[in-house]
Image (cartoon, rainbow, N blue to C red; front, side, top):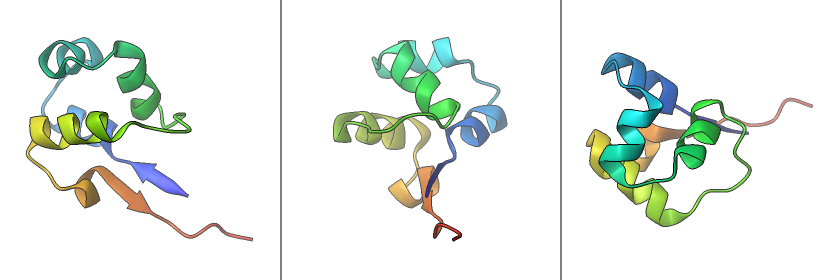
Amino acid sequence: MIKCHLSRLMGERKLKISDVARDTGLHRNTITLLYQETATRIDLEAVNALCKYFSVDVADLFQYLPDED
């Protein structure tokens, strides 16, 4: 499973989804899906924009957790 830490990053900076959408140029729906961890795929340009915006590495935005059987 891939865990997205966007909600934590936004919470630490007290940002709203609309703030991130406006500042990054990403569609609000893309950010909402990542925030709620319901996205099934993401464009590399979106990952790049979020990493640049938050000044983090990909590993700070996403984390791989092995599935429990």
